Image (cartoon, rainbow, N blue to C red):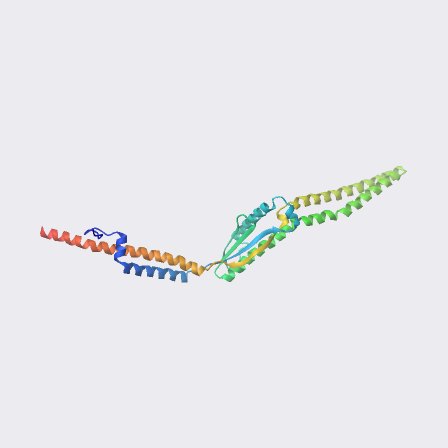
Length: 283
């Protein structure tokens, strides 16, 4: 049996395409060429990526319970910090068209990506954002460093010892006082010495409490380190040619199929119209 459609019956799209292979092929090639041409003139965006990791800043970090989990959470916080600052514009590098930051899942590594019109600007922008983040974290950590709090705590030790000696001396003087006037004077000196000792001890205790809190603080025991220098990712020219080329190829194929179907329908409609005219003329 023949696969050709009956007279007056329109052919299917695939049948029409098979009947006009040259036409469809030409339109496919033209669509592909048009897509590549668009890719060549379209503006390109280069993306550079750098990676920064949250790492222990001192040996205290290894004694903090749950430090790995805390470091991952801290990396996520820093990534949001970069994203927010870039969105508001304060951390956006010059000549950059976009900045994105995200934590790598199940790690304490932050991915920073900067897009620009040329690779040099993208790489420089990624380096700048990473450096800004590291400098900001270092500055913020200065007030949360447990070693700094410990040094402040120990700096009060000689002052406490001196104040305690003063209290003991005042107590001995008060005990040796024989007259009422001497006892009143010695009592005043003892109260001043005790007040001074209490004040210094209070400051030392506050420094000790701060040290105990910072000793188990994740941010205070961590710093940032670049683990992957900034480098451009992929080839935007090739990506654009593939994307627009496929789009042009699809558009050419669709146009070729529609054109072939229209040609077949015009061909099948002519005999039917001629038959109707002949019937009317005979009548």
